[in-house]
Image (cartoon, rainbow, N blue to C red; front, side):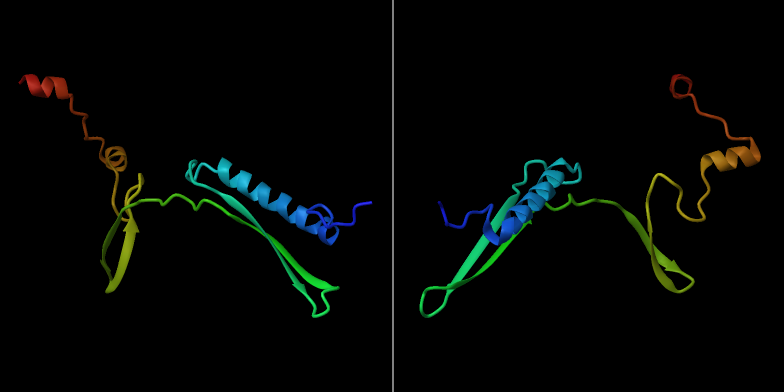
Length: 124
């Protein structure tokens, strides 16, 4: 009969359960398209034993944690300026800035915007 502590038996299997949960986190992180696919991930198991003076008992502290790849940075642009005395930022996007009208809006209102045919314009 083997009485030695193993990863599976330590704290009634709690450390093994922690490892399983951290492995799930690592696999989810690897599968996340917002992280670097080549970044290293790790799982650290730490077991600390502190024996008493007689060396016949020991307190055991065990933990498991993962190090994941961070999210990729996201770049964007913003216009900066003052509106009614307050300094503000407005992010550029595929949508018009606040207060700015799109060509589609003006065309619908006036009906007088005509598309330019580049081929014909260059041949003149």
